[in-house]
Image 1 (tube, rainbow, N blue to C red):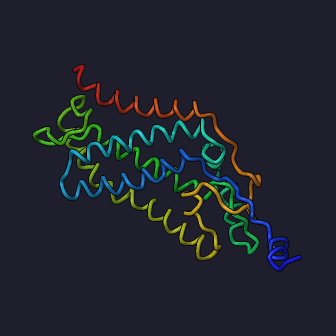
Image 2 (image 1 turned 90 degrees about the horizontal axis):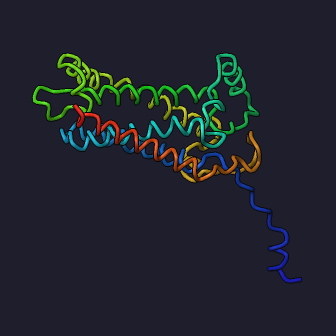
Image 3 (image 1 turned 90 degrees about the vertical axis):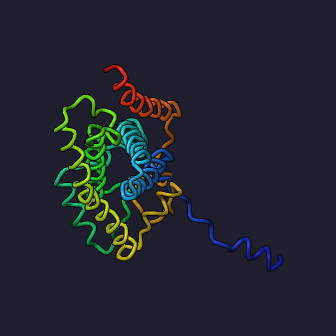
Length: 237
């Protein structure tokens, strides 16, 4: 038996992978990251036409994510990770233990930041849809359906509330850093690749099950259709 053969026979088996996030969840996540940053930047440089389309893109992504929260894979579903106070308190006690195991998908505490970010984005989008300015050039697509005062107030709130959107986003980033430093758990990698090493973690070893493609396509149709409806409504006034 040669040395090469011995090396091959004694080499450890590769650690199996656990599928944590499906592709739609990851795509929506990173598109929201980009679009929120892009919306801030376009507002800062007064490129409001780009800001307009970025906001509509965020709206479409939110519509799809809400749909996917009911029709997507196990870790994408709201029923899987949105828990009550008791579950959150129990998770926090478990988090402090040295034998803590990585949660399969969103943990009950992290779910709070996810919901907070989605709600804050929804408020921003809704305000942007009816926001108006003096000359009407930078108005939202649904501004014709509200009076001048309401449109102006929505525009002011759309700008003033943006810093509050940064609070749950900042907490989300802080949690990622905490898990990496304190628990040696990388949360960013699985959100890029969809998988992680199936070692000392919760959930089934293989991870989430596949979702039929038609569910994804239906979600895309619903999201695109919603954006199209928003753009079409002003034309019938």
